[in-house]
Image 1 (tube, rainbow, N blue to C red):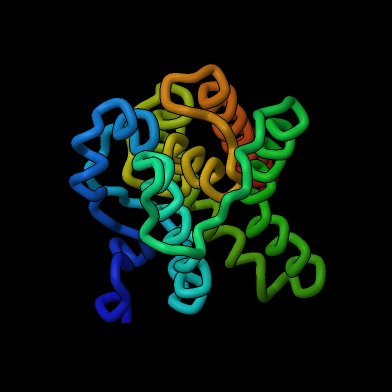
Image 2 (cartoon, rainbow, N blue to C red; image 1 turned 60 degrees about the vertical axis):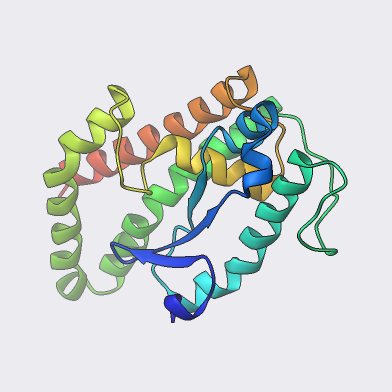
Length: 206
């Protein structure tokens, strides 16, 4: 299915929106760097392995790409339906929401399993143990990414990738090398750290 939809690709089971930046944009160095961060090909993770969910999100990614091209080439648009919604500023309230959302996203699966254990301890206890074992096996890699700032190809813990997706989805004004972008990435990182610390606490109690 991904091969039949332009710019939709699947890698490692995760769906991506992949599209080359038009040459007309690349030939405008200032705009190219500011809007596309100097990347000739955008590769945005949809953060889902579900085909239906990827197709549902596809239109939003497509419109966002077109809007970025429009901002790079004044007066030019690939579509007449591109959103004109102004960008939002980064506020402390927004950063707090980002941190909480990232934390809860990490913990959600584990908390759901804990609730299932309350209902049926025999059935779900082994499932929780498998989840904890998986986390412990990946603990060093996760720590290196979130605390030592190592690079990663895992979209679930790739802080810059997550931040860029938030910027696109929420239309946040956080250009490359800006203080706003640094604050946003820090909020993402702190939320992920808190989430995985919560998993560690669950593991210690199992």
